[in-house]
Image 1 (cartoon, rainbow, N blue to C red):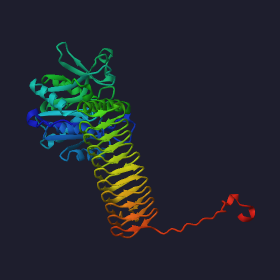
Image 2 (image 1 turned 180 degrees about the horizontal axis):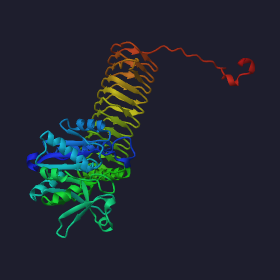
Image 3 (image 1 turned 120 degrees about the vertical axis):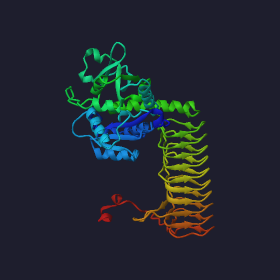
Image 4 (image 1 turned 45 degrees about the vertical axis):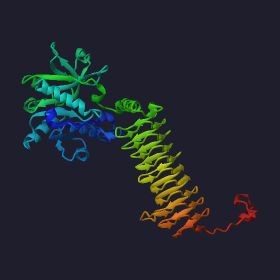
Length: 475
């Protein structure tokens, strides 16, 4: 996440994001731009970075599964302009469609940023630097480039002897000398609006792909004014994703940086190779992350907390001194010094106070557990409130679903619940109650009471299973 830069600072008026492609190499029923890196879609990440520039007009060009991509884009930015590309292929055609629609609505003017949506680590700072270079050099158009040791698949940036950009040659159209060039096009550009309109006016598809290339517009822009380039020093920020192999490699490289950032801020991460932390997670100094952990969404981990090993936290809040191990926790608050796990599943909506416990093979959902209360093992607590310093016996469940509604269980403070209890909701149990093992509690229990269920035990000392009995007995 990067700090926003307003439009007045950047001088940017319009931003066009290209999200029309299918992404066939992903081999997916889902559009490539809706695949995720570190918990956010490619499109969401690029739109967030572009929005940080403060452009008044932000457009997303869609085509493949247009309704699905457009819906996602609007969910990320309600003010976005959706442009539908027709069946003519290519980035050049996508921009033609955008320019036409924005011109017709009077929203096409000034400096125009064009960005591909398959670069999930593209950040606002990089884009702001590109726009600043474009304006300071007085360019008609400026290309964002980078240098790669292995540039295969990327369009090559061809310069003249003075370093000016002559053209960009796509991989399939490049000759041997051009393929040897390591400076590549990132598919991010800034054009002056009048230059862009003129440069794309008569694009053709006379190339190996049979597509309308936006890169061809640069040669036309050179006839109008200067075409410059700015080389990003961080190639990771401008790396595109074409298939799942590239996605995995980029996600891993990004995660290494995230882990290193937190370690430098005082967090102990014992094994960064097996620890995955998404961008919006927040971790305080002196927290400890053990191997095999996934910290996702808006998870917050306080100082002194220990997470792991082998724990997944999703939108969870872990307070100071809590210990969570071998568990999955989603949208749950874990209080100070609470002990969670191993093999605990906390579904959304739980709030566990200080010094509580959810032990081995415990599942909770919308459970509010007050200070000092223990649910040690093999229990399900759903749609329930447990008062302070209550102990729940193993194998206890709240039977909260009647087939139509989820009903609530209230258990008071200072209770001792025997093993194997069933609380049939809705039901209320007062403070200081003791329940016998195997009890089925269907009705309200007053403070200080003992409740148990009558079960008659029968013993047949000579019993044998049917297969051990004689034929006469079986018949």
